Length: 557
Ligand code: PEP
Ligand code: MG
Image (tube, rainbow, N blue to C red; front, side):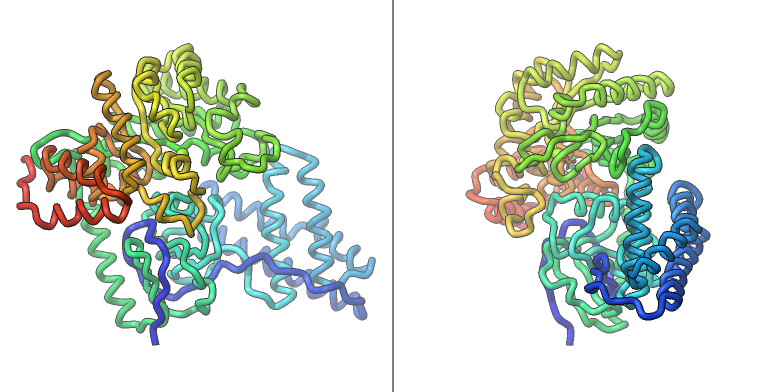
C-alpha cells in the first residue's frame, strides 16, 4: 500500500522512479585484534582497488571537462602505491582492514593539507575514497550520492551545496530531503538544475532503496510504494511539461503590455539557457569559490565572468560579488568561528577582514567586461547601511564599472531604500535573506517554513518600500529571491512596482504565463490584497480567490 509523506515543495515539477538514499559516511566498529594480517591487507587492498576501478569507470562515462578530470585524479589516488603501503604498515601495527584504511587516509590527508593549494583541495576527494573503501570492507551501503546505474529519486538527510552542484541531472529525477527549508541552498540549486524537490520531509530516509515513489515539487507530497503504471504516467506528464518549458519564449510583460524583464539566477555559464530569459539577474559568483582552500586566481575569475558575459551577449548580466559566510562557508577566507554566523561576517561584511578578496574580484569583473566589450551590472550582497553602499559603489566605479547596485536582504536596507538609491543605480531585493532577517527565522529551518513564506505581508511591505523608492528615483528595483519564481506572487511583486524578476530557468515559463494573463491594474489589485492580509496563508488565498473570480484578460500581442 502506498504511503504518503509530506514536506515542503521547493522546486516545481513532478517526477517518479525508484528511491535511493544517500548513505552517511560509515562508522568504524570498535577496534578488534588482528589474527591474520595477510587477510586484512587483502581485504583493504581489494576495497581500494574496487574503489579505484569504480571511479575509473565513472570517469570514462563522465562528460569531458572538470568532472571527468576530478574523477580520473581521484581514481589514481585510490590506486596509489604509497596509500597501499601505508595501509599495510597500519595492519602490521595491529589495525584491522577498515581501521587501517582510515589511518592511512588520515595520514595522507594531513600531508595534502600541509602541502596547501591544489593538494589541500583534494583532501575531500581522499575522504570520499576512505568512506567508500571502509564501507566496502564493512559491507555497509556506499556513502555519498548513490549510483544505481539508472534514473532514480535521490533521498537524503540533507545535501551540501557541493553534492547538489555535482548531481548528474540525467540520472537524478528529483530530490527529497529530511532537512532544509524553502530558501536553503539545496532548494535553490535544485531549482537551478530544474529538478523537482521536496525538503523538510520527515521520515523520508526511512524509505527503503528501490521503492517506487512519486514526488510533487509544488505540493510537497511524496508518495512511496506506487506501482509501475503510476511511474509511467508521471513520466509522461513530466516529459510534456519539459516540452512546454522548452518552447515557451518571449519577453516578460503584463497582459496590457507593461514590460517586466524576466532574468535568470545562475551559478555559472553552464546555467545560462540561450533564449530562456532576457538576461541574468543574479550571478551567484560564490559557487566558483566553494570547497576551496585558496581563492580562485584573478585569471580563473576573469575566465568565469567572461564565459557568462559571452553566453549573454545582448542581455543584462547582474554579477553579485562574493556572498560568503553563514550557510556558504568558504574555508580560504579564514573567518573566525562565530556563535551566530548568520548574524556575523557574511556577504559584503567579509570585506572588513579580507578586503583584497573583493578588490581582486572587482578587478576581474572589470577585466572580463573590457575583454567582451560588455557592461555588466555589479551588486553587493548583505548591504546594511548607506555607508556600505557608498563604499561599494566607489570601489566598483573606480574600476570603470558603471552600473552599480546593492541587494536588499536586511530590513535596514529596505528602510533606507530611498537613500541607497542616491548612492547606487539599482536595487535587487533578495527575499530569501530579507525573509530570514525580518522574521528572525533561520532560512534552513524546516520547522519555521511558515515564517519564511515569501507571501508574508510584512516581507511584501518591505519590498513595496524599495519599489516605491525606485519609482521616485526612476531607478530599477528587481527581485532575485525565490519569491520571484512563484507565478502568482510574481503578479503581486509587479503590482508593488518591482521592475524585473529573476529566477531559475525552470521557473521562467510559469511566471511568463502568469504575467501575460494579468493587466497592470490587476497586478496592483493583487498587491493590495496581499498587503492587507494578516499572514502568508491569508495573502495567498485572497489573491488565488480573486484570480479565480476574475474575467480572463487578453495577453497583449
Ligand atoms: C536572497 O537572499 O534572496 C538571495 C537571492 O541571495 P541568496 O539566496 O544567494 O542568499
Ligand atoms: Mg541572500
